[in-house]
Length: 240
Image (cartoon, rainbow, N blue to C red; front, side, top):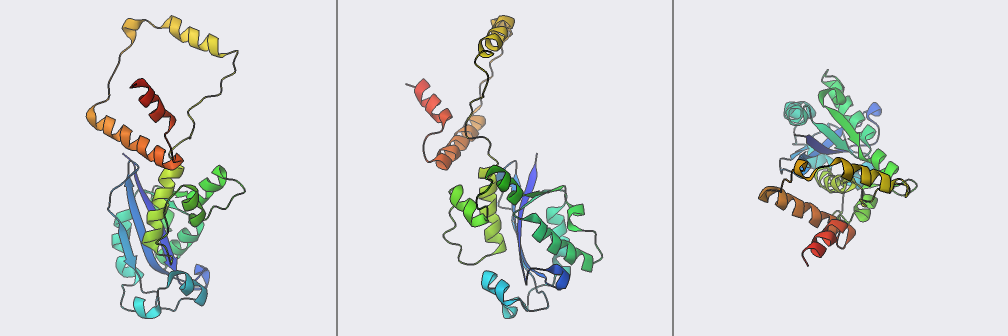
């Protein structure tokens, strides 16, 4: 059983070392790679104004944030939510630095010490797509994740988009072919066949829930490639 939290923050500026603060936290929960709907979202009073550039990005004014809780008032709920989970963030050093600065103000250890692992999807995207744009918007376009409703940045909205991108990006290889030298194939296959007795082969059929999950996975693959994935084509051919 694996619990993952996709997290995003909005801030008053770009540098926590000069006093910039967290003003919004948005989190989306994944359990065994499925969205649970158990999300976490808080607006936070930073007790300072946002820089002009940051305000243009997130649109969260000082007036809007004035009556929101301070970070110290939401820390217990936040820690209980993220505790021991894998945290998935796009450009993780930015968000982690801001969260750790908020934790330091409360005399708490840095953010990564409270969670199981921090995974940076920007690092993953650069490994998968070297030399290409790997912003969240670019990844949404690449993985066919609709972000047309995203006018301003919002922590929860961005976390939801990133969750869809992360699931698509980490789904696995698009091709199931394995490159084996031609001269090696007959030897390997024949050795396996010779060593097997039909009486030793146990066939286990999928139950209804496993079949449903498989159909859901195939539908996701179909959507990602905008066609029929090779497994779907093989099933259709076997049913003819």
